[in-house]
Image 1 (cartoon, one colour):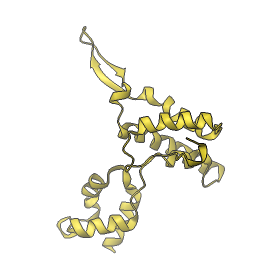
Image 2 (cartoon, one colour; image 1 turned 90 degrees about the horizontal axis):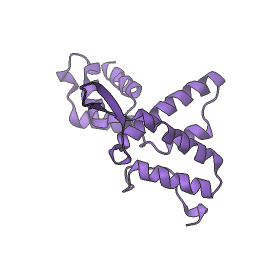
Image 3 (cartoon, one colour; image 1 turned 60 degrees about the vertical axis):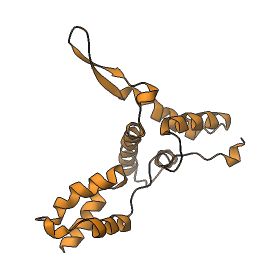
Image 4 (cartoon, helix red, strand yellow; image 1 turned 135 degrees about the horizontal axis):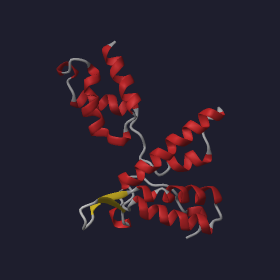
Length: 164
């Protein structure tokens, strides 16, 4: 497979786990000598030791063990990437910059966020805001439906507009 036809990044339509895609992308980036992408993927993978499972030892003492590759879910990895995005955004804000190649690569492994229009359409089709004392109380069902795809601040803005 040549480097020009290779597609980096991940989305839900790909029928592969995010972990598998990251490992394949790392190999491809190494072959293509793409240092920025290689280093970014290595940074993501270096965070995996944070993924643990609680266990109880024979002595009864509670402990944790690292998750095996088979136990790591797409949500686990997306949580790690989201944390790295948040950290990078803070750094860029302090530097007075909007974006960086590192941030763009991180975004390529996260699901596309729901747009304001998608959120508004879902609210109109699925919720009667009159049943809530205040529209902000609708945050729960909305965030439950969209999960990590919805930005909580955007949902708050939309709901605040509904009260006005």
